[in-house]
Image (cartoon, rainbow, N blue to C red):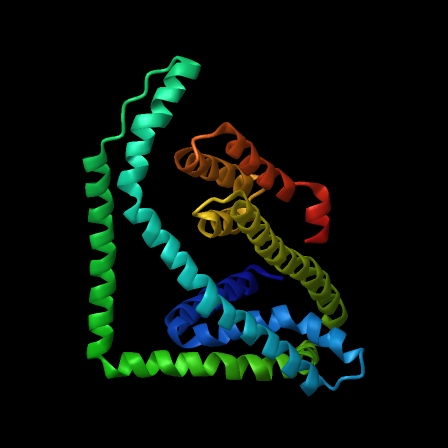
Length: 290
C-alpha cells in the first residue's frame, strides 16, 4: 500500500467517524438493537439444533429477553429506588449511630481519634445534591413536555428497538453471509478467518462478563439479604456492576457492606457474615458456574 493510499484510507476513516458522530441520535436505536441481537444469536442458534425453525427460535429468545427487561423495569428498579430513598432518609440516624457507637468503639479498640461526623453538614450536602439532581430532572422533563417532537422521537425509538432487534435476530446469519459476499474474493478467506477469531474472543468476553456481573450481583444481594442488611439489593447490585474490574466489585462491596452492617447491627459477627458473602462470590466454583 502506497503512502497516498494510506492517507486516503485515513481520510475515509475520519470522514466515516464524523458522519457516524453526526448521525448518532438516529443510529442509537439500531446500535442498541444490534447489540441485543448479537448477544441473543448464540442461544437462537442452539435452539435451532432442537428442531425449531429460525423464526420459532427467535420468538423464544425475544420473549425471554422481553421478560427479563420487564422484570428489571417493574421489579428491580422500583426496589433500588426505594432503597436509595430509604438510605437518604436514614442518613441522620446513620450519622448519629456512627458518632455514638462506631467511633467510640474504634477509638477503644484501635486507639485512634476520629473526627465525629457532622450531621448537619452531611444533611446539607445530601440535600444540595438531591435538589440539584431533582432540578436537572425537572428541567429535563419540562423541556420534554414542551416539545411534542422530542416525545414522538422517544416513543419512536422505544417502538423501533424491539422491532429492529427481532428482525436482526431472525436474519443475523443471513446478514453475516451477505457481508462476507461483499468482500473481494482475494481477501475474503483471510478476512473471514480474522473476523471469526475476533468474534469468538469478543463474544466470549462480552457475554461471559455480562453473565458474571449478573450472577455476582444476584449472589451478593441474596447473601446480604440473608444476613439481614437493609440495603442488600443496592449494595449487591453495585458490587456486581463494578465487578468487571477484577476484585474491584468484592472490595467495594465489602467496604460498603461492612460500614452499613456496622451502623445497622454494631456487631462484629455480622461483619464476618458480610465478608463471607463476598468471599463466596470470589471463589472459583462460583466463577466457573458463571
